[in-house]
Image 1 (cartoon, rainbow over the protein chains, first blue to last red):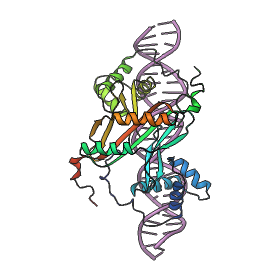
Image 2: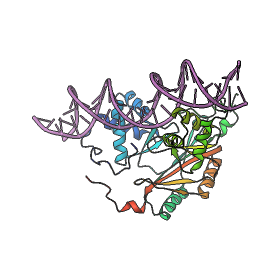
Image 3: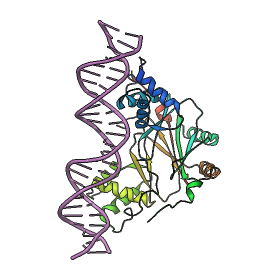
Length: 146
Length: 146
DNA sequence: TTCCCTGCAAAACATTTGCAATGAT
DNA sequence: ATCATTGCAAATGTTTTGCAGGGAA
């Protein structure tokens, strides 16, 4: 539990055989550039005609993260959400009310993060950034009924 | 699941009576400006001489978050971590290896987040930002033994 | 006294893991 | 044929909830 990465064995995460299930998960992940939950991906893969177990989905996602083919992010509820790597790094602006998301790219922030880390002597720096707000469409709605 | 804030009833989160347990949790939370897990806070409160149930700690923390007296953040393991509000807004740079944390403040990022949100017509914007890296002390250690 | 808050334990939820069968090489 | 990977279900760890008793107002 919460063990530091690098403490556990690196073996076991490297996939040596290509299976239908693993490809299905990777393909499904690559279809969208939004962060999605394991449960969501599992359902989508199944809907696509590939019977896959939930545990297998988790294992495939973990492998993809370990091999840097996917990014993982924790939602507000604490569930992990995954997104395929490879595209340009960007963040998300999420509406608290309707859930609409807008992709935002911030070179300034990337630079700032890198700079700050360097100032503190940190290397191999990554960061997670999420913006939450209320979109213009939802502004006029009843925010509370109590 | 992942329900948008504002959709649920605001009542029930407002505390109408002051109890020893609730004060103990709030006091313990205010002792440190680091993000701490519920389990950690629970242990600390108990060690301080106040027998408190874990569920009560969770309820107190939830109340503090709801009343904007505390900030909540999800760790990489998915566990929620809490910090008392009131101080200047800043972020954390966490070492992946030894877990050391450094507080970093970024007015530029705050400004950027606000600006980006405004460009998209979003209001009441908040954000979460975490930096992960390897500190200089841990750079020389054996990253793997396999 | 009243009824909110607490405490315990079970439930709910996301994720991991053990072990036998399956399928890729 | 070999052995990594799958699948199920049980285990794990975190957070929530039901219900009855205790303490604050």
